[in-house]
Image (cartoon, rainbow, N blue to C red):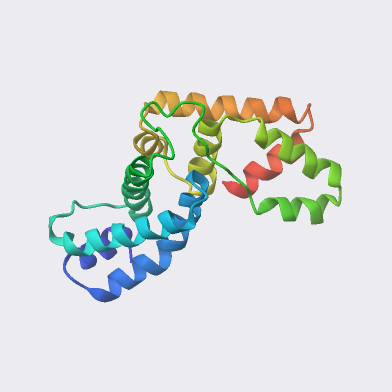
Length: 192
């Protein structure tokens, strides 16, 4: 069943569609939320509030052909508002002070396949050299496989700015890996 069909059934009141959406996406939302804040409670509460509002307002919701995008955008907006209430972060300008932590499970595969701790350390250093916005863009583009248009809406920036951010992130990773592009190519091939 396509995302459009599942979403349509959910909007029509189908509880199986709601269960499917929650089962498929709640963990992704949770992991994404933890990249914005380490506060598990706020992340969990924001997910529950999001789904409660979706159920309460299901008949008023717009259509979507990409449920993950719809949920990520709504969830991020809700989580940021909650964090602002908590006065833990100032997200007005989404400056470089914004924290977005990113870790890829692919690191484990790199260790096994390359059997080289040096390459893993190089990868960590390269990722840590990215700006928080670059980390967020790489996560959304390669881990969640969102289109640039969807990324732009979530990150509240232009599509061109998203493309530039990804290009700069890849260039930064390549530079940080000092010409050893085998790690970068391996990561991007696995993530795409």
